[in-house]
Length: 241
Image (cartoon, rainbow, N blue to C red; front, side):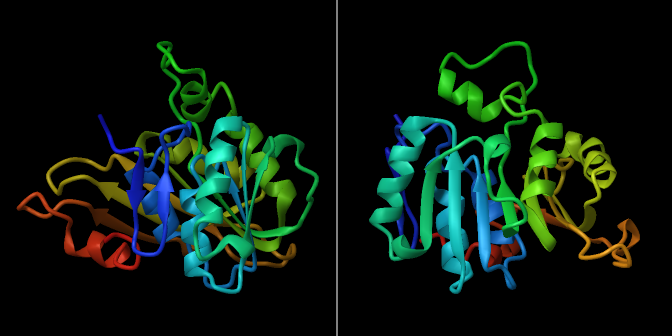
């Protein structure tokens, strides 16, 4: 049986009641997203609160709002936030992003979205909502992001590598511009399993940020000995024990 909690250097995440337990995807997004200029961050589908907590730790002048449609996840995320050093800067809401009334408010939106589309669903309803695009289609997610982002704001997301091109095309069609891309390989000999993407909403029609300006790299998670690679350790050094 897996542990009901996961300890990081500066906070503990209890996740036994959450639809989104602590996992590598969330850690990658929370550690990688370019948050240097963020002041108002939204974590869509916050689950246990992991990404919200990581964002608050990294961006010390930031206020973070984490939202989720799963009541049990919201309750547990609030507990995790309350027990952390960042409680005053994080708010957790039971909220559907499609119905959120905060147009143009956030300068960075983070999301580890539902992405499985297989016909076989997980038996747990909350887990199904957290992991299947039927609960939040990519098109509705991106429409919500564009509405909630302030001009010049960023949107960072982690996806299966197989969804890369279609998701980027969708975002470009909605007016977002891709600025960073990182392919994630579990081991060097295997193809990328995940992709981290960061987009920017142009501040004005004259904003010349375009697809050709994308910073692209690759992150391999495992070293030859099976431990964390040097690059992965460096990315997460402020979080993992």
